[in-house]
Structures are given as C-alpha cells and as structure tokens.
Image (cartoon, rainbow over all chains, first blue to last red; front, top):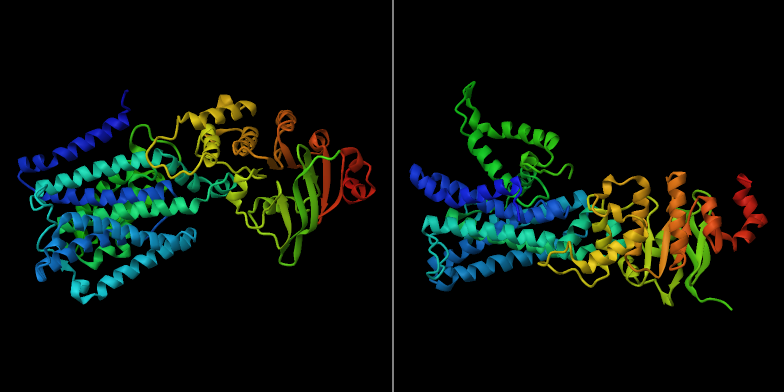
Length: 330
Length: 250
C-alpha cells in the first residue's frame, strides 16, 4: 500500500499534534497546549457535524447544544459532588455515559421533529431547539444561570487517567480525535454511510429505489449528537467551567464555519477547519495595529468575515482544496 | 386465452386546483406485455406515473399491483414489491460513479442498511449483480466513471440500469428517450427490445417510431383520460385517436 501525498500531509499533522505537548515544554510556553486542546475538542464536534452537513446535506444549526449537554453533565456532577457530597456524581465514567446518552436522547427528540422539514426550515428549527436549551440553562439559577458554573474538580477517572494532569488530558483529547476520525472513516464507507450520502445526492431517487431516508438520517443525527456530547464532556474538563454560552447559536455557527473553512465531505476537513478557525481568531485578534484610537485586533471578526466570503467564493472546499489530490466540485 | 393483469388501474383521479390531471382513468397492464402510453403534452402521463409509484397521492380510484391494493403502500414500499421507475428528467446520483449508482439500488433490496462498519464498495454481493446489469445496458466500460461526466445518452441508459437493479416485476419508463439523438434512441430501442422479453413494461414515450415498433398494446391519453387502448394497428386506425392526437401529424 502506498500513501498519497495528501495522506502524508494528514499523517504529518497527526504526528505533530501528538508531539505538541513536548514541543511546548521545550519552548517553555504551555499556553499553546491548552489552545490546541481546545481546537481538537472543537474538531471532534465539527467532525460529528460534518457527518450531517458534508455527507448528509443536513445543515443542523444547533449542534453546539449537544456540546452544552455534555459539558453541563460534568458541571452539574461536580457541583453536587462539591455542594452535597454526592461522590458518585464525580465519577468520570458515570459522567461520560450520562453525557453521551443525554445528548443522544436530546438529539433523538430534536432530530425526530426537525428531520420532517427541509432546507431553510430545517436550519431554523434546529437553531430554535438549541436556543431553547440555551435559555433553559440561562434560567436555571441553581447551576449559575448565565454566569455559568465553575467546576472545582474534574471528572474522576478512578486512577486510570488523571485529568488534572494537563498532558494526560491533552492525550485523552488527542486519542479521542483519532478514534472519532477512524469512526467517521468507517461510517462514511459503510452501507449506512452510502445511504446518508445518497440521500444528500438525490432523495427522490432514493425513495424510488426503495429507501426511506428518514430513519437513516435520524440515526446519523443521533450519532452526531452523541459525539458532540462527548466533546462537551472533554470541553468542561479542559475549561473547568461551563456556561450557557457554549450552547449559544453563534457557537453552532462557528462549527459550521469550521466545516466550510476545512472543506465539506472530506474526512480531515473539519480538523483543518477547526485549526484554521482558531488560529485565525488568535492571529487576527492579536494584530497590534491601532486605527483612530481603536485596536484592530478587537474587531478581528471584521477581517474574518471577508476572508470567509473569499473562501466560499473561490475555494469551495476550503483548506481541502489546497491539499494535493483535491477533488474538483463537491 | 388471456394473460393475467399485473397492474390494474381503476377510475384513478388526480386534481390540481380544479385542473383534472387524471380524470377517471382506467387501464390494465398484462403480465409480460409492453404497454405504451402516448398522448399530447399535458395529457397527464407523468402524473399517472407518479400516482403509480406513490410519489403523489391519488384523489380517488385505486391501483392493484400483483393482486395487492397499493393505497397504503409508501413509495419505497412499492419499490420493494416490484414497481420500478425511470425518470423523465434524469435523476441520478450525479457525484457517484456509474457502478455506485447501480450498487445503491441493489443495496436497497439487500436487507436493511443499518450496517455501520463493513466497507461497502467492492462488496461483491452488490457489485456482481450491478456489473451484470451494466453489461446488459452496454455501460460496463463506464462503470468507474463519475455519473456527471457521462453523455446525455449514457445517463438515460443508466436511468434504466438503476431501475433494473431493484429487480422489478413492472418497469415504468417515463420518456426514456427524452432529449436523445437519433443514434442514441436507436441504441436504446435495441436495449428495450431485449428487455421486453424479460420484463413487463409500461412505457411513456413521445417517439412514435419507438412506440409503434416496441409496444404490444397502446393506450392513448388525452386530458387525463384513456380514449383508446389497443394493438398498434388498432390505434393507428382508430378514428378518435386520429382526431385527438395523430391528426396533427397525419
């Protein structure tokens, strides 16, 4: 088996990410490990969303909601362990199962209703559901309402891995990314993935040859929600904090932008997109230039917007279209 | 001796905002025959196909297929009991290869697709029957070509290949020669002559040469009604048909 140059680039990126904590040790600045850990978590969420958008043509505009559910599971668990001494709620495995199951069940409910609509209606209804969850979190005083919830102790993995150790947490996130990448690779190439891609390509024909796309789409919706919930579990542990803000519709928009930036319907696209998105945010917001008393960096989105338009107009597959062996068209 | 009716359409009605697209239409398709439907533009031919496949609901009347009333059978469900259609306006998976298009149709009829792990391409359970069909339709050379880069004629052939992959009892062909060049049409007629021996076919077609050389029976549809049904000779000599339809050309 020989590797294409694209596969070499992908592999090089993964090797670089694996070595990163040691590189930053060497440089003596661990800030970047935290930043990249955040990028990888968002990449996991973007990968799951890409199953819906890139492969399935389902533009869900509420995907951050599932990250929020996963993150709140950790936050609420830590809260009750801390306040009420309920130790089992700090158990990482209990939290993990609750985060994944919780987001899967919510995705099942939201998907079952939303997937009866198409196009703009689907976008709006998924966004509306996620905003409902956002406002629910804003409303619950016990868990900090819109101030959010500080997490005083990270998920207790019972000695298997210590999440307080920054490197351990980083490698948990890194290995999770590898697993999700492989999972997506298998899923997209399977009989199930074939139906998901076919339903995006031509739904009328799918029905005519005997498929009912709805139940397959709903399954994809639940899988994507569950993975995003897992990303939320990681996110809460990394940030030691959760607030309704993680579920805000603009966060869902960020995930879509990552997919656009990275390239739809390519396996690694969302990873490149998440990297590009957060690197650009970091880069643009640190521009030292001052115009008329205003620091340009504070208005980084003003620069980011036009850039995104250029990508959509001239590089339909985002970063993916610059890598060797890019497919033409969609 | 009469052959049994595979498809019975009884008093079918479809109304669009007061317009009767299908007006109390009745017809039968016998087991093994090629039954053609002709009629001027707007006669309701494609509407009839959509009613038969379940893409749109009928307002009244019933459709009996292989002895089963189709009233409560969904569009995908009808595919599974042996109804297959080709589309008047090419409707394929444009970003899939030719082989993948046919494989997906084979997959639809190979049990459920809640299989998440095993690789699907190169699965010989799908590719073998798919390649056989492509051979029949003369597309085996193009198996690994992306559909969007096929010629129009080839896409029309693939339309039929995808329908065949669902192992149909009845093929509904909606203007298979639409937009085809003379040579391409002739090739397709050859293919249809061959398919005719193996399948029961309901053919909608504008190309009169094709219809009269292929059909065992012809129904003439005008304003959603079948004004005549008979052998090609009977239709050619039918006074009503001449006036309503062929009159323009004769």
